[in-house]
Length: 131
Image 1 (cartoon, rainbow, N blue to C red):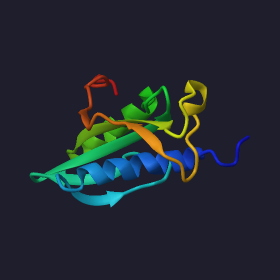
Image 2: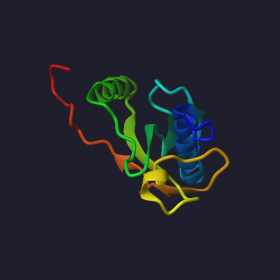
Image 3: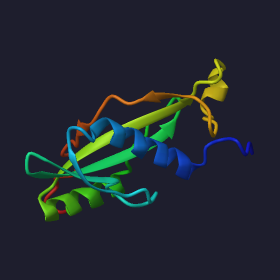
């Protein structure tokens, strides 16, 4: 294993910091949670509405995704707090190489290509009354 590669925790934190940097002018940030297994990562307000911002990060060629079980838990939690859910899917590539194989291994203190298209509204995929 290459010790210069970003760990899963470091990759996760990089994604959260990237999103925070891009939304801090638009939202009132109430809290940021860097713990890997905790959702949402960012709690924010905009126009008086509470928002749960879920950030998932992966490496090239993928972008972060949410498991159905985690989505179900977030939806229940958001409903309880009357919050809107927003997702940020982040992809990180090693920009210090042109080799597609090596691009999937971002390095510590390296340069990155970030695939981030902004926040997306959570689809109501789990609005099943039995949940």
